[in-house]
Length: 234
Ligand code: NI
Image 1: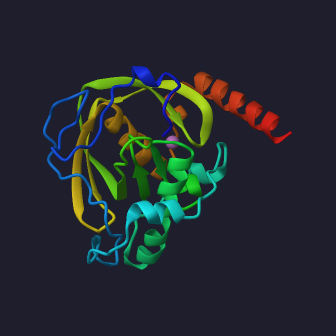
Image 2: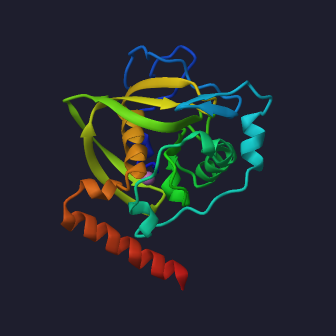
């Protein structure tokens, strides 16, 4: 996901050690912020277990080779990613720092596997990439509950550069996932984080934010994007 151009209108929400969403809501979150250290080592079943490693994610991320972000209408963006399994441990361990590095450089606040040509159910999120980094690595994320209440906010996407539209989604979601240490986690989120999580999980099912729009609005955006890409390619 990319931030819209009118950043000042977005509420500032950050993960803090107090487990609260700052800005939009004062609700206590049911989970600890994801651990920042250690990438997964081994997995059994769908649970990843990893001894903590002395891998400093910031330096690992800084050094990580960046990936190419696929731009719509690349066909890979329409495919469904498959769940991460035990055989994918090494691949995901190598992938996560590169996905964070790619997202931070873009800059964006979320990036999903298919956007970098990887059809694994992996996404990275950081709502405050320019401040204190609060990386969230999501492996096999699943929406387990949504609110009846809806919320509309402007969304953008690194795969649709410079395109933005108001998207309506459930205002609040509960997401279950494995973090980068393999621990099971659950986040309940609304506001920017809630929208971002839904946006990234959509990517894992081949859904782009424009797919939530009418065909007319979608085609206007896709044509504008294609025209911009042609001009850029000249
Ligand atoms: Ni996106």
